[in-house]
Image (tube, rainbow, N blue to C red):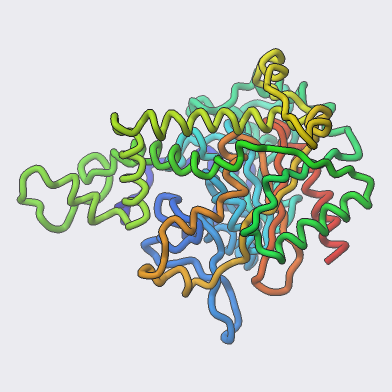
Length: 438
């Protein structure tokens, strides 16, 4: 659809990196319009993992698979990607890199081609947590101007209506500063993450990491996030709905290339152009989103998915010790408490939550490209652990378990909204533990 298109301006994050002295080397391959979990829907062909001649290429995850692979192969110091439902964290997990999704609104989306406005977040992929911090930027400071290179990519941007204002950032800093001094950590272990489909190797690494953290003096607390079981279904209603609206402008007249055939037929230019120039996965999500926004389906699908999203946010707010900095305290305390074996842990609250990043190990590309045998919804399942944090707008990071082959495992840390530095600090702790045990 956009073949040959050259953007007339750079995204804010690119401008800020260049102002700080970074060299933007180029663009990387990814799923078309960021829609996919394996980076196989690009017009340039799939992103393939580096492997020996005796090994078959494996998926590097998606949609930002090219960025993750470039970092893994040391073609660059770090790379950017947009994380809508896990598009930075999943590729990081499957390439043995670190992938960080900041809190929603902390990093500007100006200049980013939109997939789902309420979910899209510019993230960072690097070889270690320190590399992520160098690109993301230092702790928030009232004295730092919004376009100062000291901010690196984060900071308020008036060109992005979803960007958090400087005054709100100061309020967030005040509420989270004391949390970063707390040591040891109270770590949440959601029982809903113990899925029967979870690969045994990933489960073993997850369990081992929690035990290692416990030996370091941190405490592990079972928690309950009951609504997260419905998060994936809600996400695949909300994200395609927003995408169907955002991609309506690509019609061959306002944006995008026109169709190469049937130009003389009346009333078919838009449909022919979109049918020819959008890939199968993009067409599938546009159709799904258009249906869920239709008058006959919006109440049963879109409105219900929005309600599930709010309940997912409430689940997280209940289990975190830190109150959501953008919510009135009376709203936070009015969230119905969980009843049962995890009530005490939920009452005290946790600092972070640790889950796997992916459900499975990286699959062979050959198993993904046989479209006749593929259920198009199978790839959606890989987002089951990453989607809840996206729906709630929370900071999350995937930290790799050291591995010498391409059977990569990533562990995900999730924190309260605005507590990005806590997540990064915990990621450094987890990274050290994994390197010691690896």
